[in-house]
Image (cartoon, rainbow, N blue to C red; front, side):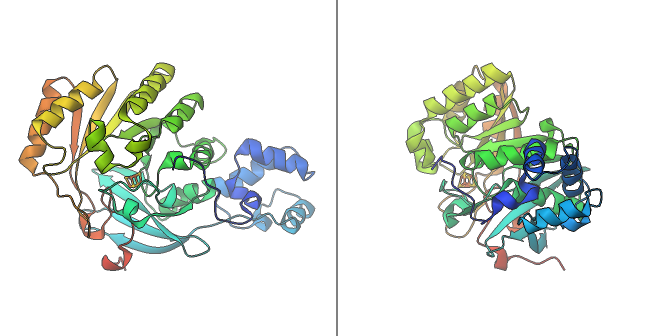
Length: 357
Ligand code: SF4
């Protein structure tokens, strides 16, 4: 856990979609192209969404031919299923070339859409309240496979006002590809998606938080807390056995010192597990001194899980303890429940959901 695992795709280094613009410039020089060809390649892939090197018309034919001969290609995800929930939430199932599957979700809030994308197929972190954790780890996604989720969903006519790395996987278990994907999405030659519209959510890997602080990227950071002492948190999240709460909080403070940016704590409320007023007061103590807001999430059950959601009155009471202590708090109720697209429900249930025709 916590270390970068190589992507499963052979020849990933030959995927032109998986290159930042500076990497493409290097590649073009190495392949004896003209320096400005890198911009054409990047914009044709990330702005015009062409699918083959032959279609990059500003490149000399001989250079296109050379790239193809050298084995370069432009990858594309297979969108295999779409599901719709009556509340408007959409779930998209993608397949890798070996048919490994993973999901992305589009959440609607009034006229604003949030696109929740995956950084891995499955996850190693085994959080006890999460269906993805129960299915285990399948693969790291490449930067190209991460950005392609955004492209395919937005090209299907769905605007993404915000992008959150909160789908399948722990982003800081695949840090290099996650940061690569952010750089690609943010590049003005491509989609130019503002960094502040992008949130990376971690279960709490201190090293990843420190790397993000050093990266000079202006992303938003969300940290899944879910419990405020080591005993309770380790029961819910095995990662806490490896990185104790104090290590996590140290990394968050260092991140904040370096970036000055506010963070979000995610706290999923589970009946009789972490939802007492005592737990709320403990959360106030943990958050104290950190510039942060708290999202209280209604727990989403899935087959085989041992937890139940807190009732709404308990959630409101919990929130009021935080608010009275001056902690900015929002309650997030379940979305996409019927298609298993809610937080913590992704994976392993594709065949049980209602298909969108
Ligand atoms: S909550 Fe996030 S980190 Fe934990 S198992 Fe699920 S996907 Fe992985």
